[in-house]
Amino acid sequence: MAGGSIDAALEAATRKYLSATGIADLKRLSAGASQETWSFDAPTADGLQELILRRAPGGVPESRSTAIGQVREARLIQICHSHGVKAPNVRYVLQPEDGLGVGFVMDRVAGETLAPRVLRDDLYADARTKMAGQSGEAAASIHNVPMGELDFLEEITPLQQWQNTWNAYEKYFLEWSPSPVFDYALRWLKERVPARDRVTLVHGDFRNGNIIWGPEGLRTILDWEIAHFGDPMEDLAWICINSWRFGNIDKPVGGFGRREDMFEGYEKVSGIKVDPERVKFWEIFGSLRWGITCRSMAFTHLTGHDRSVERPAIGRRSSECEADLMILLGRN
Amino acid sequence: MRPDRPTADEMLEAVEEFLRDKVMPAVTGHLNFHARVAANVIASVRREIGQSPYIEADQRERLMQLLGHDGDWETLNRELCEDIRAGKTDLDDPALLEHLRQVAVENLGVDNPKYSAYARLKE
Image (cartoon, rainbow over all chains, first blue to last red; front, top):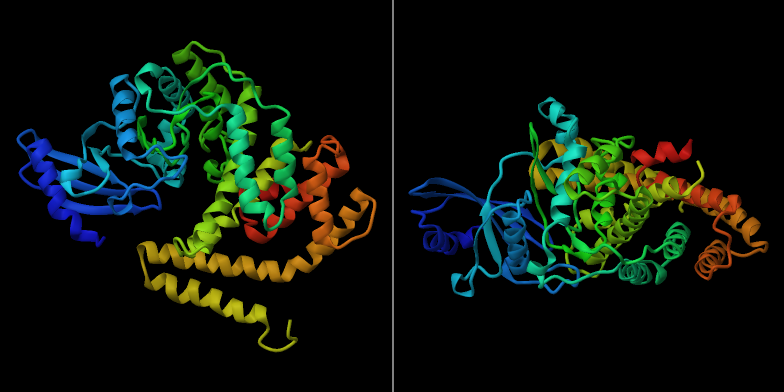
């Protein structure tokens, strides 16, 4: 679908649902393989609405096994927002008669998602001292959302997480050449898979890059497409993966803070004491999973599905995760 | 590889320089980003061509020590992975951990030695 061809349909939908008098400044922000994001403004009687359209590429839903789809993502975000989670405010969900495919429109939150700016610009210097604690508080608020309202989500147990990762390793590595580091990590993890006990809503991609920051700190959490029920400690670990520290290797939480401060914020909101060993399990698991995911992205290029120089380059980033794993697992 | 001038590395160097010095300053946005990615890809392929013969020889030596027998790199590496998977190796074996540390350093040294974990793991 050509860039500008959604104009008329989006304007009609925004007139219908938000009583807007038109739309302006429509811009495509990203064209990911799983999501399209557009920014636009809509004047209404209540003033100018600053909005984001998120929809499946070309409006056509994709049956990716780990993604929940835009319709469920919109419902999830609405429910989280209603429980005080810092999730975007969904304004309307696209219907088939709108002719825009599958997706939804939400309020656009001003701020910064680009981690290198958040980690280095003076504008965020004060926020950086609070980000770890705020991340813990935000994760706890996600994990507090009543699961009864989320019956459209599926659970992924710790053992299933391990199995899914093994399956991906088999598919993307074993057929070509195994990685002894990944084989080591897979066995180390298999021998330590935590028991399924506390199960909550898990964001699944809670990291620096999916958070909108302002000079005062955390504003909004984005990208809910791989949310599921599972071990809540997955979220506290994923934000610590070295890949999301953007060079600040000694600031484990997102490149900006200390684990202790995140745990304190988490405990304040959830009332639940964090077991650092359990978080470490998920951090090792996350590094491994990201390493395998990087390789899988190369295959979307290699199979001709989505040809781009970026994809094979990402594929080679699996060796970054091998190094992260040996720091986490080694004796040095 | 042909012992000829320009060498394969000199050819790739020319492409890398073209992307960095000519293409990148001339374009913006996605195209600029992809030109940089392309230049980085060329740089890593150059490192791979230069380093992989030594890396393979070193790894083969270490694998023969770990496994106690001779073989080519690919077969030995696969055997080590299968042994780890099958639970035949002791996960606390310092020689195994040292081999894996070196593998990680060697792979990252080719793919992206600027990554923060590289210097840390090399120490």
